[in-house]
Length: 179
Length: 87
Image (cartoon, rainbow over all chains, first blue to last red; front, side, top):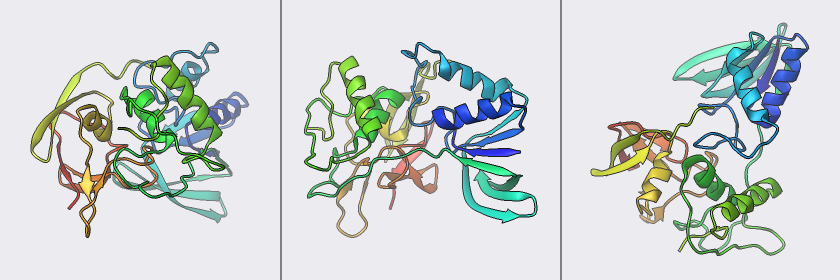
């Protein structure tokens, strides 16, 4: 048994690759649906010509080699005779599962650099603005105030890249701070 | 994946009625309706909205149907939800 923590693109790719090589796989993820931060669209994922996300999502449901546990929070990982035991909480119930190998695909989040006023309503990371748009069809704001010098307000190249693309699609400047 | 944004949902926030669609987070549905304060800080009563937006920073916690400290950026709205600002 291989346990994969995270059901974003990396975790899903790992799960399918392992399953295709005849390994029993368990994928444990905190979100209610697979896709991670990247494939989090409220409506159908579009714009991915390869169709990778559809293939992965289908595998989570249909591949008999893959056990998919969603909405789970892992709170400890303990090495023992049966490999590594992962203790997790899902739907208010404590459970555990053991695996010989664990693959971490827990992703990343913005690294925010504090500045005066960063806690005020309307100031948010690019990841937040991106999640609002992709995941919830809500534009964070109409006016851009993008704070960065050598450090950006919030950091991942991935998040910034996706965010600017989302915003071009919506004809709205990327915003880190809404008016 | 089939579309999630298929039906309208109504819920209350601090007693007022709001609407959103299936799959939207509490924070997104409220922000779309113009809400700019999800809670006030305990001591100085300063307003807070979302910051990280993906469940990391816990700045957006609210009480959902009596359960405290729920992250508004993650929890999806459900029909008839009663949501109030964290005390």
